[in-house]
Length: 280
Image 1 (cartoon, helix red, strand yellow):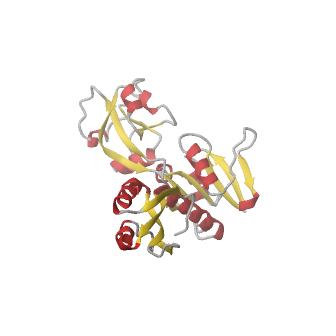
Image 2: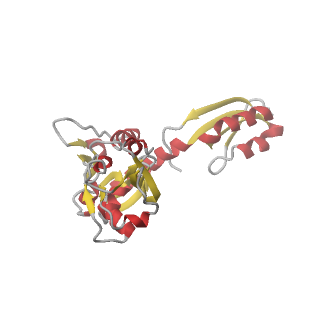
Image 3: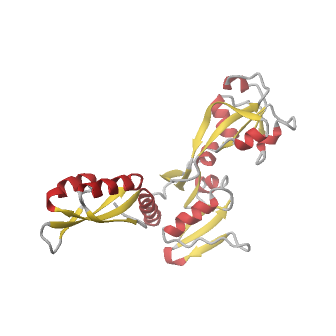
């Protein structure tokens, strides 16, 4: 049985649970326990702080887990990234008071910086002796309280920083997203690879849809150019030998355009259906 770490709260929690559910896993967090067992999938889930998961993986205590790459990078965890996921995208940015005279990131090297990501911040500025004020939350308020001169914090929309009278300066220090990670030496195990393939199948399903339609013989080649599928479309002969049934995977973002083009060509009975999962 493999041990898998999941975020116990925060913005990564809900999409992670939704992802695993779509992949056939049963991960349920209860008030009385921080772990649960999915016997059908030979997996024991542990609900941990997202920032702690890279440590458990790096030390070999947990086999695999899902968390943000910023947490992994901050402590230089030796955990192996198996797969980037489709959620948890954010930027780690520096912010200063609106009335500050600072114009460049380099000017922050000698300033007091409040952050939850001291490791990334020191490496970015190449200053091991940088004045870091370590905070676990509410970093943006530290400047108003006189604790710090600037902050380095996770940014999605930037609205929280603006509400605190701060503005982003310079380029992001780090770009992050959620990822499937494994402890060193466990990435190629059967259970972890099965989990990876299931997630990959779900990610494919998010990007593709299945289109089915009937096409007359004289436009079949043109229709197939619009719907080439992964390898090639599936084509079946109908009772009327002059018509063919076609089925193919198409990118979701192009689905409506393709349906319009097929209809304009003269195809009939055009249907679009969701894909729950796939192996391609």
